[in-house]
Amino acid sequence: MQRPPQLPEPDPAARDHSARLRALIREQIVAAGGMLPFWRYMELALYAPGLGYYSAGAHKFGAAGDFVTAPELGGLFARCVAEATAPLLREVGADAMFLELGGGSGAFAEHALLRFAACDALPARYAVLEPSADLRQRQSERLQALPAPLFERVVWLDGPPQEAWNGVLFANEVLDALPVSRFAIRDDELCEECVALDANDLFMRAERPADVLLASALGHLARGLGEAFVDGYRSEVLPQLPYWIDAVAGLMERGAMLFVDYGYPRREFYSPERSDGTLICHYRHRAHADPFLWPGLQDITASVDFTALAEAGTRIGFELAGYCAQAQFLIGNGLADALEDPQPLSEVERVRRVQEAKQLTLPGAMGERFQAMGFQRGVDFERAFAVGDLSGRL
Image 1: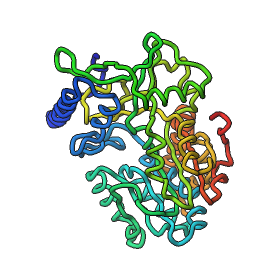
Image 2: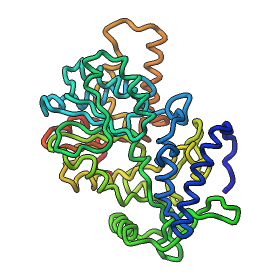
Image 3: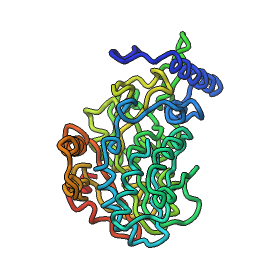
Image 4: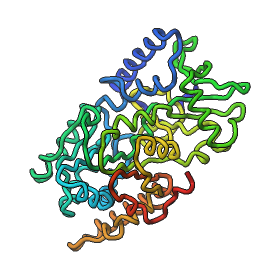
């Protein structure tokens, strides 16, 4: 696979870091008999302790990183999410916990906590489930600037809650980074995409017959779509999604889940036009399709099958509260009010907020490409999806 054009070169230290991760992955390929399933390669590339993209110390978010998430643009996104979930925290009561999966730079938590305080809806705990020690440190440094009564509510978790809890689970751009299985249809047979070594000891794609778990997942997809995949079709699937959802939220007794990510309903995800899947890599604000380039230095993601997410959430006993484009979710949860401010704004700040709102809502930016899906258990979260509900497309 040729290197994508027009990508900036990593510095020597970054190259050395990537080489160490490459060596680790090579060892695992050899130990596995010459092939690793793609999901395992992606898992190592992103999460190998001390070496994976999300486990190591390079900047990932914002202008100095590889991509920009909604919370990095400013405070509007977090404020609208807080407006949507504050009634739930008040409804749940004094023991409510807000659990953020993957805290990024801490920008979302900072703005959300300030808004929860203004809405008289501060959770008893604001928990961040963050696997990266480096990101935890950066989040802590940022959040320490908050007033002490807010920062004192923040805790970091090593894993999902292990006892019953009530509150809100929130994940922004988390599902797209879960390691996916890649599949291909060859001569009407279902194959699993793997990673092997070529004659020059470089990573290459390889295929083998699909195992029972992958074959079962693809059978479920084909039944839902009402047709089989054509020969040559390649894409991704996340067979472990139901188990992952159960692990992170199965012990919630009362509350809601909110996921925001880029993706499609199933029929659009597996459309004939998307015959090579949705896998994409991000490096220094450039997107390309080579997951083997500089492992550990680039993000690797796949779009979300929101139909699969709806199935996974309802399977563990939640009700689907709603599904809509990010633009409609933000508009329905106070975006217009968030653009205003009781205090007079400088012209610079006013223009900046307008530009932030455009980036969050315009169809050519994040407005339609990103979507929001909510689930509820013993609370009313449907009101947050009063504008532009798309559940009928699932």
